[in-house]
Amino acid sequence: MRWITRSFIGLFLLGLTIGLLVMAAGNVFRASQEMAERGNRARPTPEREYAVNVDVLTAQTVAPVMTVFGTVESARSLEVRAATGGRLVRMADGFRDGGAVDAGELLFEIDPADAQAALDLARTELADAQADATEAARNLELAIADRDAAQVQRSLRARALERQQDLLNRRVGTEAAVETAEIALAGIDQTLVGREQALAAAEARIDRTEIAVSRREISVKEAERALAETRAIAEFDGLLSEVSAVPGRLVNANEKLGTLIDATALELAFRVSNAQFSRLIDDAGRLRPVPVEAVLSLEDLEVSVSGVIDRVGAEVGQGQTGREVFAKLTDGGLAALRPGDFLTVTIMEPELSNVAVIEASASTNDGRILLLADDGRLEEVLASIERRQGDALIVSDVPMGREYVTQRIPQLGPGVKVRPVRPGAVAEAPAMIKLDDERRARLIAAVEGNTRMPADARTRVLERLAQDEVPLATVERIEARMGGAPAPAAQTAETSDTIVPDPDRRARLIAFVEGNSGMPGDVKTRILAQLNEDAVPVTVIERLESRMGG
Image (tube, rainbow, N blue to C red; front, side):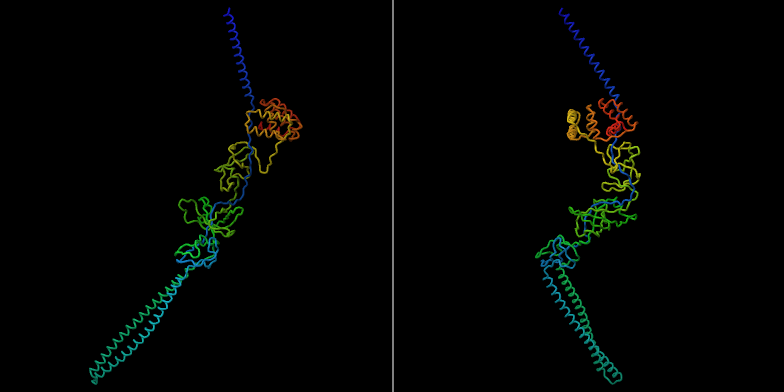
């Protein structure tokens, strides 16, 4: 009998197990059918719209501004060096770094004693040479007189010889007398040759004394120059820099003691790229005299100067690119500038006509911008970027008068539907509502119990619910998810604007709510009650139309 009892117990447990399995299979089958039906009843996701800022492409004439950086240089600077060695015995009061001097002012003086002694000695030697020249001139006069006397004597002796020969021919004279006359004539000829030699020597001495005098005069001039070089004189008005001299210091010849800079002859040197340089030359390749403006920032003060482009560097330079351009500064705060100052330079380019100025964020690097079509969707066009001006672009070849998106974001592209926000549009303040304690506690509990909400979003919503007035859209969104009671009519009417929709619009909204199977029943009832009223809250209509794509 025991095995029969155990057999019945086993059959009973087997039947119970089969029954439980059948019940479980039925529950799984019903759950899958409900999920399938829920998925089939899921409402379509409405097309998303993006709010974008738009502006109008306006044709205008713009003068582009090229912005570069440059340094101030002096067009005239002079190194102040000691022309001779010695001790500094005198210096100008302004001979120091930053000191201002005038043209012709004494900068410094080296001890002139040695140079003065050399000048005195050279002048003494010149006087000695001049005395020799005077003596040589007198000797020349005496030699000329002595030669003239010898020539007179020779003439007398020659006539005496002729007379003796005539007497001998008439047989009156003697041959001895003729011979004596010939000997006398030969003697005076010899004397005359000596006088000629003395005259030549006197003339040669004259030449030598003249050379000696010239040499001594040169020595005097050199001594005077050496004495003058002991004094350094300013060649022009300017400022001194790199001064390295003090009174009493011994300096060497050609030693640099400072630099004299002409503060009124300043110019600006800056480097531009090849593309920028192409805008500064004409069709013949010559540099145009384009005006420039430069600004020196001194904390809260800005010093502005103006000028005109003067020339371009003779060579590019190893390892450099572009061109180095020099501009002559002509007006403005030149007195505040110093060589080496770093300035911001703006160059005025020729005007561009029929172009538009847009934000740099509105275009891609290759110039593609988004336009707003009549149906609220975006179109893409390719614009020609003429210039880049900081945060703005100067473009051409664009449809003037069309609206464009001022800031491109990754979500935007051709065909995307957007809601334009035009300049000057003021965003409407969200409708607010005051909550009673019971309703506020119910909303807070719903938010705190929502484990799927991110922590930062939960904190932000709780902070809004803790305020005296809470955005109506936030309350309705929470109640729609929790299936709570609608907001009291009095509170809604006080805090939101209402409109009277036309019958077609009201019927379309009611049909959308009734056909929305994913909306909780209590929320659907509340919204249908609001739609059946004469005046419907604007927020309700806008929220429904945004979900239905209206």
